Length: 237
Image (cartoon, rainbow, N blue to C red; front, side):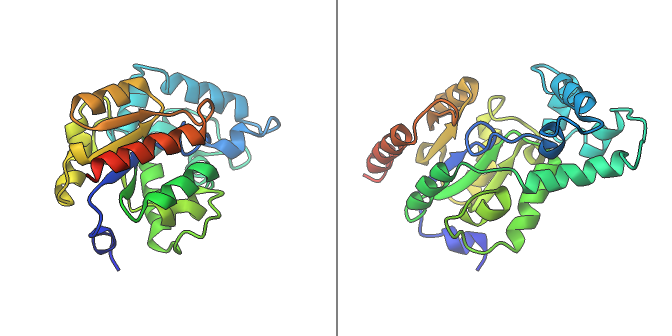
């Protein structure tokens, strides 16, 4: 059964952000979490530099202008004991697949699938999008054990990623979400976005959607459940 067939009966969509909402793991998590890894400090410094606000390399990486290979090449690491560009690319892909998932949120989203599409909507890089789709092609239906992206990917109906559409959520919600909504016969008025960033939520609201600002580190799942139940009740009238 293809994605469109599986989603056909549903007339609402829940867009859910990845980092800060579904997961707190970041790129090269296995290296950054290992205080003894040879390139940990250098890698963390580089990640911090390119992913600060208004960083041109980081912005271009998120928008698909620069590939992960290009970003890694720009690190100018001196190959040591096999720690070269290929190693970093392979580890980036593996760590994307192993990113942890908020199990409470995943369980809540699973409850909504009878009434709404569940779509990951993320400002993210090419390797994340490629890994998500690669894993999804062979994923079993979600069993409730959503420990990692690989475990949870069967829960989601689709993915919208900034590196695919060439724009981030806050920049142009119509361009970011519009293609998916049009393809499924929906409007932004029939959508809600769960996101931890105020700018993303404000832009979504201003364009006619309903945004819920929720941070996995700060906010309760009970509060989110109540908010989504209220939106679902109102939107289905």
